[in-house]
Image (cartoon, helix red, strand yellow):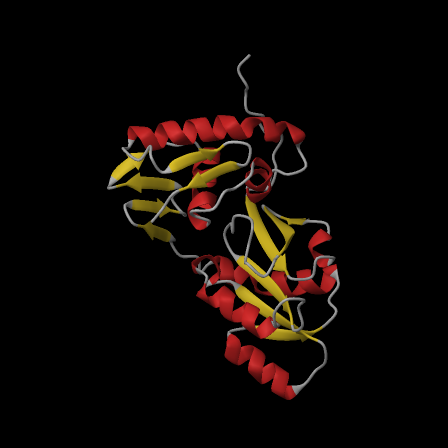
Length: 237
């Protein structure tokens, strides 16, 4: 029996805005909807975002983390192509002038004294959201012969268009952001923001099948590899 991909019904928000936080407890805050935007809290591990960064990104980095300093985390984020335009707030343990100076020098946009509750984080994001919405710019990812136009939701291989539906494009984009790494079905589900709906777990193979077909038609069928029992990997040199 052929699987059919679940469809969303209703008139949900159009823009999904990610609020990343290194605080695992804060990452469980309930999402917030305003107009046509929904603000979703996500956990930010030391290795960087494990989900697609849609539109603007807002990041709250704790001054003290388990495996590295907040300063080093900020430096890593600024070196990450996905997060170069993110608004980063360093969450200090106390209002120390030297800590504030070091946070800004590392690349943070501003700072706050923690801990921050859900409302405090949302207040900071919403205060700047409207003006930054006007400053979005086209994102182009160049990965050898693979080009991904994030804003235009279009991919090309050696100049040839890769024909993909929206979900398959998002899968390709996330895999391109995490190349040469085996990604499980659950990771792909969470990356696309579809965790919580068990039906989507059964559709990952459908997405992958369509993605592989689109890549093959564009001459890039060798890029997508299945690792049996584990998941999928996009092989990019």
